[in-house]
Length: 329
Ligand SMILES: Nc1ncnc2c1ncn2[C@@H]1O[C@H](COP(=O)(O)OP(=O)(O)OP(=O)(O)O)[C@@H](O)[C@H]1O
Ligand SMILES: [Mg+2]
Image 1 (tube, rainbow, N blue to C red):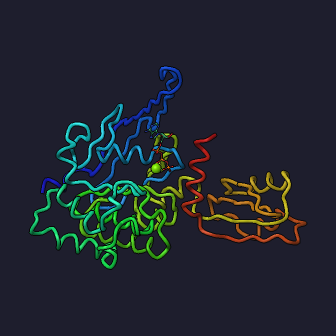
Image 2 (image 1 turned 45 degrees about the horizontal axis):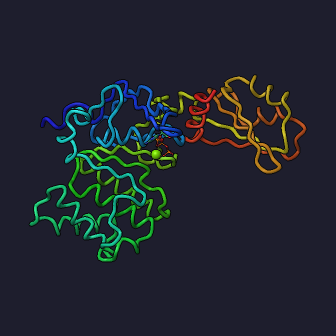
Image 3 (image 1 turned 90 degrees about the vertical axis):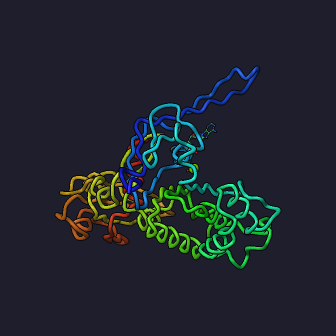
């Protein structure tokens, strides 16, 4: 089938500049280059995760891919079609969930909201009610389906947004922070739903601030920082990129610079980061090789009776912070 050919998303040099005017006769122009040349390829049929600090451009990129916002430069293709030229072809094949309070009708029920969107998407009337019932069931909102949306909690609204996003059975679904504001149980159910959509063949592009979520859901990730992709790979490969999957942590009541420098000189150490928390200091030691372990670190830090050293696996959060910090330098 033709639709399975080629990547789900392909962008080349995508830029987006925002200009806002204020002041006398709106003469003061503030320009923000939210995206500064984004090159990205996302394969079909899986979950792709986009990470990045606040203001990195994640929502801007998501909106451009979902044809909600035009790029100011570059080319973006979704399902092989240009987002600028082929928006009408793309829209029925895409779902977008931005979340938040907007985009729902508060005065009517969840079910009635979905009826409105079903008509908008051109879902045949004969299929409509069953389709709505099944998506409401899928997001676990059936019991509240006939209550007015203004009575919904934030999490219930988020679920309704998701239901709207999948109502027309899109081939590709864009989810901007899908589990924000959800309690742990609802967040877990939402992740389960996302996985089940992929099992049905849907491609998912999601943004998140939750590292464990990205690690759990996304075989492929990209990190966006200040409008640029600074890394793009699997979680394991990203770990290698920042220097291996072993991390040691040493905690005590303060270390001096000489001690930190000594640690940095130990074989296989790729990075030592210092972090205060309360009265204690934690040193995070990233290891490139297996040459040293807990004992060598203990020996390098004599004279701390209260010293505790442990080993853990390098987390995606470590990797992420390294990448974003590097950009900030
Ligand atoms: N409509 C707009 N007008 C002007 N500037 C905008 C507009 N939308 C976004 N921006 C700016 O573009 C940059 C990227 O914003 P964007 O919302 O894409 O970031 P984000 O990565 O989604 O951040 P967050 O994690 O906080 O959601 C920011 O500097 C933001 O202020
Ligand atoms: Mg955002």
